[in-house]
Image 1 (cartoon, helix red, strand yellow):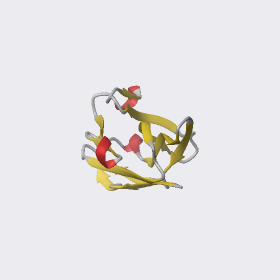
Image 2: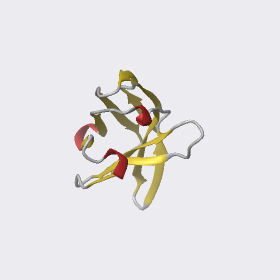
Image 3: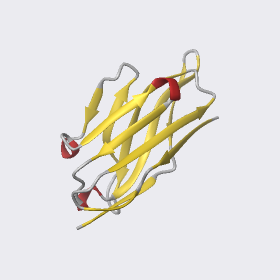
Image 4: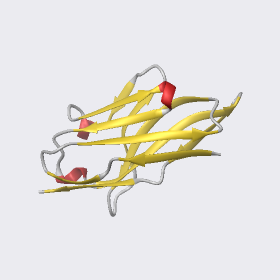
Length: 120
């Protein structure tokens, strides 16, 4: 069993910053990649940013230059530093991990989500 626990969401004014954290725990052999997705009301869940175990990163165009993803492999933790937040960044943010639980057996796991609200 694998658990992903997010923290750091909240309410912030436009132009402000927040830092999200996600810790993975449980029966983990190794983590291939971790990332953040978000879902606003009425919208589909979308990728925000992802990072591999080798620290290669990928960002959605909407957040490039404002958000930074990082990870601590030893702590199975991924972070999302969000700067210059805009009202359109308002959404539930979900942590996702692609990981191996046994040799040759991989899985995608999701956190429960954390609300980010940006007021104008």
